[in-house]
Image 1: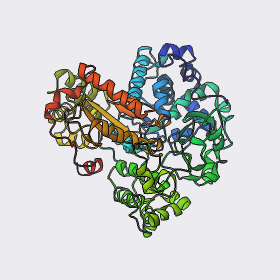
Image 2: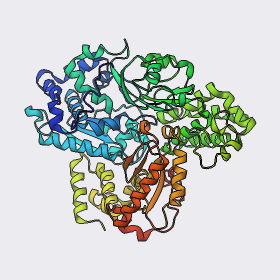
Image 3: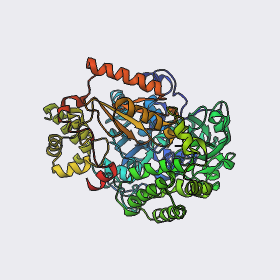
Image 4: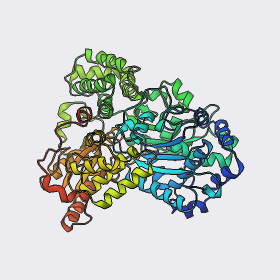
Length: 443
Length: 190
């Protein structure tokens, strides 16, 4: 098993309390940062480490910090823990099990970016995670790690834990800031980018939970050590959230550049496809990324290789489909998500996600027409690149890639009125297995 | 009624944020703890404390799906139906619960004990299918486990522990169907 960085102490009993966390080397990175480095030194370390954002876009973290506008307005840090991308479940685990490491990452990052107030935006549905982070923040205040003199230095920092209330869109950074300011979570026009005009008009840095979780380890171990993991351009390790049709779903931390096949089939990780069926398709980075065919299973999981294969590493949510999955049904389900979560601000996304779902629904239930398949592509073309924020683009990924890879399945639904594969292969069959649960992915 | 203690908590929140308006969301969470859902009195209290109009507060409250516009049941069961759970057969789980509770998704039982909801990806795809009861996770839910869960919840409802805040307001429960509009429509027009 390769060396773990982010999840190293995750299963130490009691690691969620400050005492046990400190006994395991916790807050030593913070002490080192405050005593050894100037803020700009830390920005340089993170730049040199090659750490890239773990939220979805994969933007270099150090570079993001370097973009902060130099003016006299107060600066803010927002830690994005609004984890809700379908297929992603790493941040919730990190917050629930080891909240102090997140708090330490937030403090170091705030120091590096000269931030006076940091916010941890926890998704509303994740009640336990929010309680754990809130408690860790309280413990950190009591231990003098937060407040006027962080660890006895003259650096002052406040952390506010803010709970969301059910809106996927608030994971988009500008919508997150709107939500924090007490408004409906509508995304903002960019530019200006948050690094220049962000929360309350101040320069703002917004990082994903796992990204900030990694910071203490990079500061302790050094940039060169961290950059020793992964590939040339995709450095370090990250958590891959493996779900769907695999024998052992779960979170696995692996160096970037590990082949998808290892994650799916290795006994240490996925352990093979559920029911020993054949692999049909993989979504490599959460439902907002393009579907890859089974022929791409030897692709290595780094930003460049996955991009070359035609998708994105996104949030690291690897969703696996076996051969019994009806791709039309699965895409319909993903499409419903974007319809429900579209914020309604811009027309292409609000109307497009709605109509896309309608068309998919009639195809799935055998009422579709042949022209509907092209109609879907046309609707996607009218959303992608034409909506206000990336949610619109994200909504089209599974539809366009699904049609490109499995067009014959969509057409089969039109000509036969039911699924090509799985238990939904014939109407009669699904109805005859009374009481028996249907095979997932078919109806 | 929103208690004075709750209003004080809201005031403290408003003072804690760099701008008072940011306290709207946590204050609405407090309203829901007190009242079980977002009541007119609750909106009024938040508006007063933060210094906004009631409409302004309501415009925020209606955007976020976790703020209930109607009183929910004592036990709110949210079944995840997104792709990770879909691949692990959440549809069968949901149908099973519909049958067991005698309501359709989105509805509350006539006795006001249960609200059955579907919800988008709960960040638990590795332990799918998953549901939440009053915001606490139940993972790897088989049909048997779901039955056992309802049995336990039924017992809790009989003995009255642990009580949920929504309980006092259930007399206001008007009908089975809690919301004639989809979330999307409510967000756009609400």
